[in-house]
Length: 160
Image (cartoon, rainbow, N blue to C red; front, top):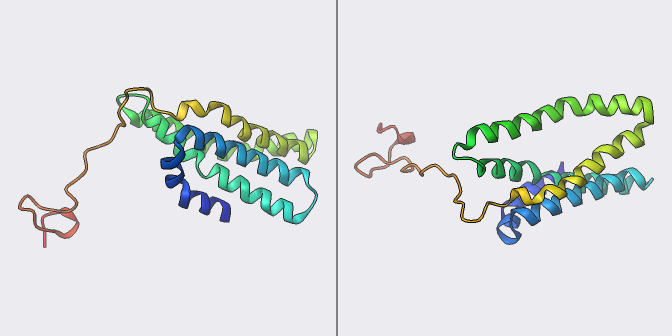
């Protein structure tokens, strides 16, 4: 949890510094290496460090994927909804798939698959960059709670 929190806290600054493509690639690699290390090194400290790296790496992947989906079409909402739905679907089906594979191959091999898959996300990092010349799909900013006269109002409703 600490790795995920740390990654979320610094993710926007890292994206501004290195760009979404490089951050997505690094996030996938850090997560895969961390998870793989937690599986391969038989020491509790290595497991804790590896899972912290897993959390730090994955903490930037979904926000970047949603942002990339929002830049795909003129109407970003359906693309963003698809990415979010697939993320939720993975949360529901992943444990069942790992459990089934663990019964057949053993737990270490079953957990090795998600480690490889999360590291493999680095291969799709180019999809996180905005197409050349494309502008981000952003809604116009609201007037931050001001009424037409420019006075501050309670929650922007015009009431005082």
